[in-house]
Length: 88
Image (cartoon, rainbow, N blue to C red; front, side):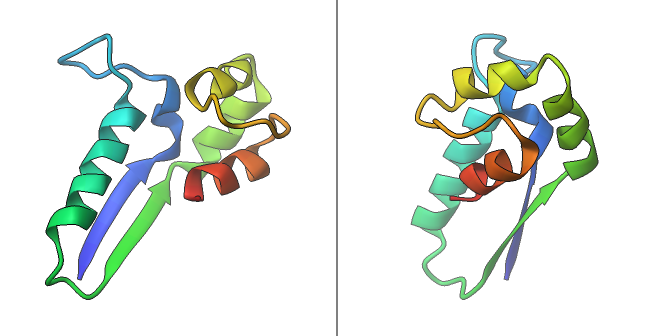
């Protein structure tokens, strides 16, 4: 089994090595590569951590940036529907 951990709070944070790229976009790319290249693995467990920090972020001014990074998201800027969107 493979355990893949991703932080919910990174949707609006840049990479350290490339300030023009989103950490979440990099995570999504790595996950896609993992799926494409792990045909022999039977189980992939995805853990989305830092939910408490994500809730706090979505309660403040950063919530307005969520739809900037997830341009296909049209739902309310509340933590639960946003997490559901990320899980999809």
